[in-house]
Image 1 (cartoon, one colour):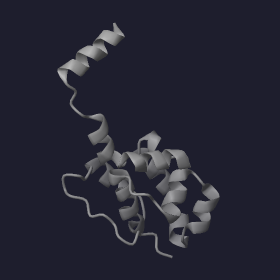
Image 2 (cartoon, helix red, strand yellow; image 1 turned 180 degrees about the vertical axis):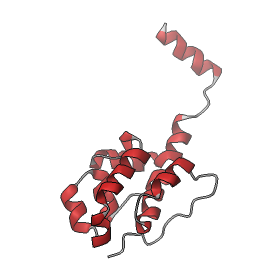
Image 3 (cartoon, one colour; image 1 turned 120 degrees about the horizontal axis):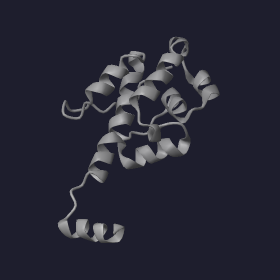
Image 4 (spheres, helix red, strand yellow; image 1 turned 120 degrees about the vertical axis):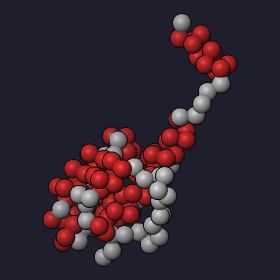
Length: 127
């Protein structure tokens, strides 16, 4: 059973998050591409990665190969350390992270510069 997606997205150097890449070393190499694609781009996870992110312990155990099962505590710690809490823990959280386009999609969505008129309108509402 392969844990690597059929077509992993090769991230550009500018997309890589050094902290995430350092944390990723805790996981078996076969899971790197799937976790990276989900974190950066919101690529829908499958197999054991989806089960881990959704918090389904029994499905994770069933889908994982022997090597991955032995490293589950380290993998779970990696998810807790590397992902924001809104990106894992339930099927709804995983689906929302995917819809948002991962960390890069969230940056594009939530870090848009606002116009001066929008800023003033927002300030008036809060006063």
